[in-house]
Image (cartoon, rainbow, N blue to C red; front, side):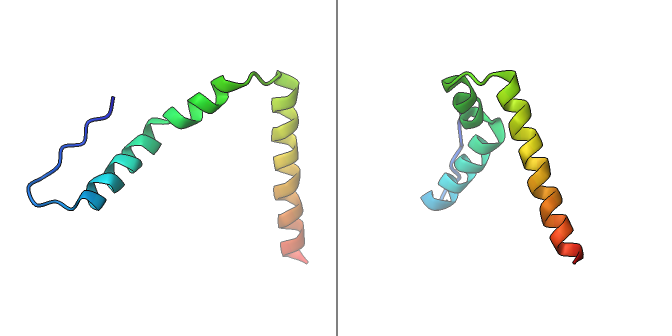
Length: 64
């Protein structure tokens, strides 16, 4: 559980922003999404390859 100490006179929006930043750094949301549904290793590899192809395509277009 994340605990964010609020300083005297601190704006609640600022404290919320600190909480969100700390929550993102822990990777809790990402781990929940990966546990939600099982992905076969072949599908994971395919996604990595497709991402690499997409990036390569963008770099090729940039050179032209």
